[in-house]
Image 1 (cartoon, helix red, strand yellow):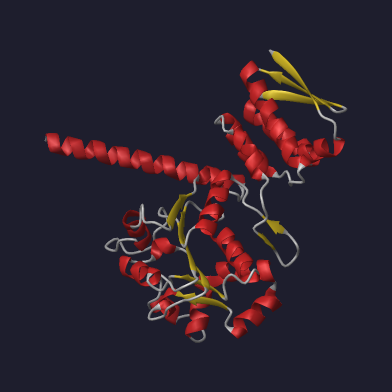
Image 2 (tube, one colour):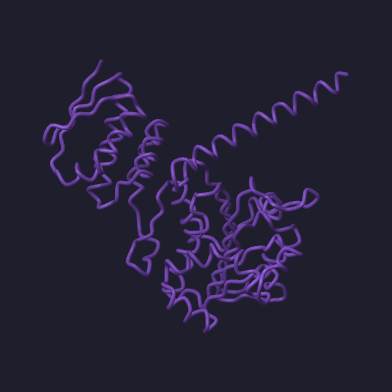
Amino acid sequence: MTERVLNFDRVEDLIAVFGSFDENIKRIEDALDVKIINRGTDLRVSGDAEAVDKAARALEGLLALAAKGEIIDEQRVRYLITLVKEGNDDYVTQMAKDVVCITAKGKPIKAKTVGQQKYMKAIAKNTVTLGVGPAGTGKTYLAVAAAVAAFRERTVNRIILTRPAVEAGERLGFLPGDLQNKVDPYLRPLYDALYEMLGPETFQKYQERGSIEVAPLAYMRGRTLDDSFIILDEAQNTTKEQMKMFLTRLGFGSKIVITGDVTQIDLPSDKTSGLKDALRVLEGVQDIAICRLTAADVVRHSLVQKIIDAYEKADKKAEAAKTVNSRNQRKK
């Protein structure tokens, strides 16, 4: 049994780190199998020597973030514990970086993980960025934040958000209204993000002016998009032909961000995903960045990360079983 005493000056930072009903401390205790006791501005950490060292590094990292005014929430604690376990806690100082955008209600939007920070840097640096990763990693949300920031800074004149309506056949026909009304349900996540960034009234005003456009991918054909920030969401559901069509819409002074999750393809089995194909074809092309986010970058409910991990393990088992069966068939 090892005990280590950490002394901190600012009680306010300790309160932020502890969280409501000491929930953040309990998460560290459970994750690293240690005991943490607070005595004034001292924290006593006891347990296995290696676990105590990791817990101390996690606490120091959280206090450093609190001192910079960062909000210490469940996701932040979970992610920092992951960094410490992997020996990457040097990245903690990178977790309190610049604000990407301010929402209509004054909430600052920041990249919350190292992977997200690399994603935002790639968007700023390159003309075309492909953000690939599982659900909850902030691919679309951060891309929209970057688009709104560019629009407010007048580096682009328009924001164009699009996604494929995979069920573009008979199922859409049963929905009421004209074509726009029929495709709006597929575009709802993009509307939600823009409403939060700009507020419903401002969004409506810009949309009426044509400064913001939210449309299905089919509307992009035959256009050249200059001075625009263009986001293609759910790109895993594009075909190779649709992806090529979309990429060639790029005009002068524009940026393109393509987001998707190659594990959630809804295309018919005989169709190749345009996103998968683009990742292969565009690898290494200058001014095109490919960012791969992982389960560690998930910023939704903690269960989302566990679900993603469970599916990844199941897929690996299925792939291994398939390989074994294939070998057995050859031997026969």
